[in-house]
Length: 353
Image 1: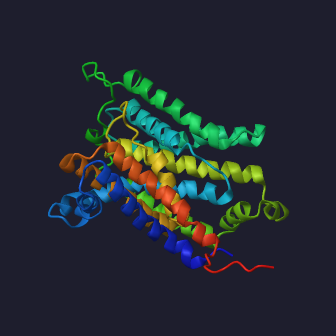
Image 2: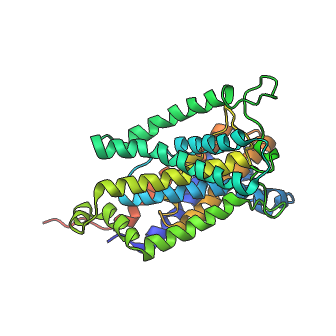
Image 3: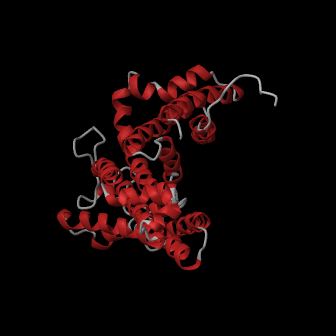
């Protein structure tokens, strides 16, 4: 049986090892490793400007938590949706399309809920493509969902340069700024805190996932399908239905995350709208052990690397690629330390027969 102690100790050790290995990386780049690590992990929380950076943890963490919660359902069931980035993009496009189609109507009570529904449906439809292909033709959902990310990126570019381009933007790519459209803006519910509707939905998703996975029959079926597929079939779990449900949940949550981002922090459909949240959420899901509360903590940690990484780039001249490498390092160290979860290390001589 896997060690329950190491199951939760492994992420903490992975974070510590990542800091250590990241220190060597930063030293190789000619930077003071202690200064860089402090800037990334300490300054956003406890420096003199922490009052400005702390709300950003909610803003950056909300989409990561939303997407990772959706992915955790599929990963637990053995359904590998790697294309959440594409679903995030399409959800943003669909949600923004509703707002732009109704511009400048003043009816927030109607427009914003419609945007949320459209964002969820957009992500759901994009996730259903690899889901249906897997169920109907036995294709590999990893490859299909990943390739669809590049299709979504081209669709994003086409919308930013074509159908959604701001008619008053003097030819520059990008849509109208939704953050300046009262009926579509996803602004802070409490000014200066970073607490917008995306954060609220992320917290609701965490609670929903926790209750579903630990107290509901569907959660039991998800765990059973992932841990013992043959036993799941004998227990009456329909594999095709499970694939479609898990892909649909992950796609819908990724699409909603995209909608909240385009209506708030990002503000518009642009060529560089996507910043890799869909891929980073995979790290968040595994770092959180596919557990809703663990994902919440891991999302805050990864948000910290985005914020601290930005500070390190501006103040210390650290390359942006180094931050991405640090985030990837976190996943690889977690996979390495996970060996201790499944195997007990013993020191001693091998007995000779």
